[in-house]
Amino acid sequence: MSLECIVCSSTQCTLLIKQGGYDIFRCRRCRLIFAHPLPDAGQLGAFYQNFGHNREEADCPDEQRLIVEGAMREKIRLAREIAVSPIKTFLDIGAGCGYYLHGAKKAGLDVTGVELDASAVMFAREHLGLEIKEGGFLEAALEDNYFDFVHLRNSIEHFTDPGECLLKINHIMKKGGVLILETPNSQSPEHLVRRLFLDAVKTLRRNMPGRAAWWYWKTALMRPWAYVDPPRHLYGFNKHNIDLLLATYGFKSYDIMAKPLGDPVYHPVSPGAQRQRDAEMRAAEARLFSSSRLRYCLYVFGWKPVAFILQKIIARAGMGNNLVVYAVKEKTVARKCAAPTEELITGRRQDMSTSETKSALIQCTA
Ligand SMILES: [Zn+2]
Image (cartoon, rainbow, N blue to C red; front, side, top):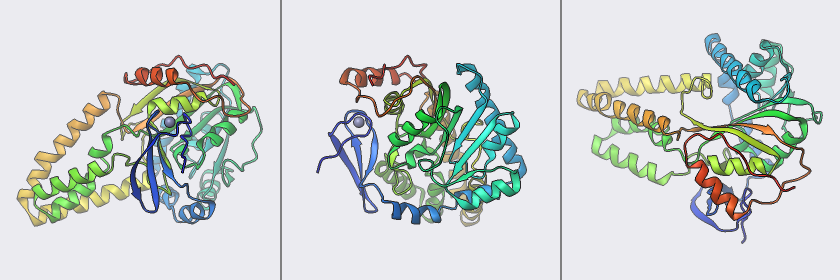
């Protein structure tokens, strides 16, 4: 069996683990993490029918919607700084319930959204007066060379072929337009602090702290690819390989950041989900407190400040959980450009090892 990395075309891949009927591999050359085999259309359809993320979002209080809209305004401001021409037309891919779209509309942009989830599309129509195109982005009828600004937030890792997605974005965007791409950072240690936090509390409630610590360590070690969990996330990118992938589809990265969870602009809230987690956390804390004062003290005065400090250090080091790329469309490409050479890959890796990078990119050799 020969596997080929979708970013660098290397066939040298390491099997990390078998998980739920999928193999999770890491490319030895560019460090892309990916699932194999990829789920088929039937598996994906069944999975997303019960995804529920948008139903939670639709249920959020108004103040959180305003936070999301504020985050959108900040993104528009930054995009305007780097765009070659004025930003007037906006596309949100995976628009959900339409909050980002609504923010962009309020800022005066001509907005278009695409969303798979029919209930989210209906919510946006009824509550926000937005007409979102229902269905997949690859199937959506969109005009070529039309958009000045495209928002691809936490979506690319869900596509079975991210390259196909970027190729379509390349075609529908104007030259010099801005793409904001956000995706989990496969090289961030932040999930060890935040993602497993609730699980750690639950375990602490059931077990002695020593055992909880062992369990936590074991889980953390077993999940270095925490964000690749097919059929949901199929790819795990880092600063270096997302930069290469964008370059092979005609985009030039202007800025690549790794923002921490809770960042006011890039991780404002996933409103319903956040509330659900907060409620679970409070319930877990309450049970912990009722069952043992000692354990509660260990948690509040031990783990909680440690987690807080660790998260601050990770954020400072530019290794946060969310990769945010501001990229400019440099040219229209008919297909994927030539795979990057070894020098480019090594060069980019060294560049990207510095925390936040204003990149002078790779020339795509179409
Ligand atoms: Zn690779």
